[in-house]
Length: 331
Image (cartoon, rainbow, N blue to C red; front, side, top):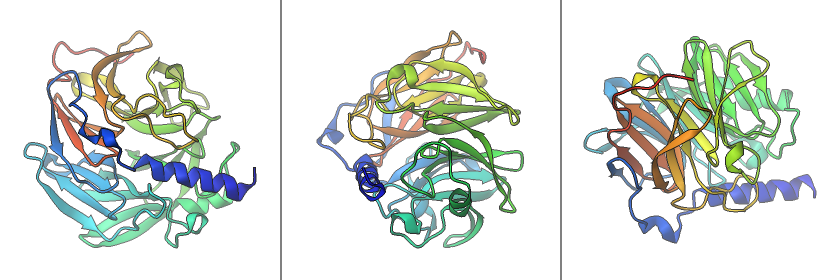
């Protein structure tokens, strides 16, 4: 199959990832108290806890970052004017803070997918002003991965503060990049076809979620850990389909977000509606299900013992009583 044909199929799958389905009126998730906090977000994907303890969520389709009151669900625009998605998914795909300064990870906006913007990390300087601090797309073009790819600039998925800069997971190029605030981009660790997604950091240890290769079998959904100079990873837990995020809850309990049962489409296709789950690393190499029935979740945050789950359908679910005593320990 030619490169152009493969790219068209890949882009079609990405568009399908945020196309709402008839299942949007499905019953609420099962598990601890789950309440629908927000609806109507446009191309929601990444999230972070920022100044004032608020939840900040990227809306790639709208080219903005929204601030969400975690108690009331009130949504206000924090920053707008970022490059919007042009192939269904992408644009501002994740957000992170260093101190009170916000940074947005922007992907799938370059010329390789018909765009004209920079793929990289944008510093938020004001409500509608930004500075590109790192051109990840250029780095990718000059340093292609060893695994096969269809999008030369990659499909970056998550942004995590680390050592005064950031870690970036590229789920298409199968690697983790380290990026400094002055724009230096290096490859921290590269993988085979495992599809790295969400990231979390504890001290010098990086925890990473893996969606696994198509067809995203449960045994390939893993959380692994590695150090900043480690060429290999240590498996922490496995057994949850299409993992898309990993986060610490209260008491250093480690949680992951399963998007659910793979739909059977080409690479980049989302899980089937209402098959996602919030799972807890159980310390025995597996996961315990906390809440299931989630509809294609994309990112996870914790405030105290409450989890906040962002979904492809533009919703945020608030799940209370997740990290309650007695606390567990990291494996």
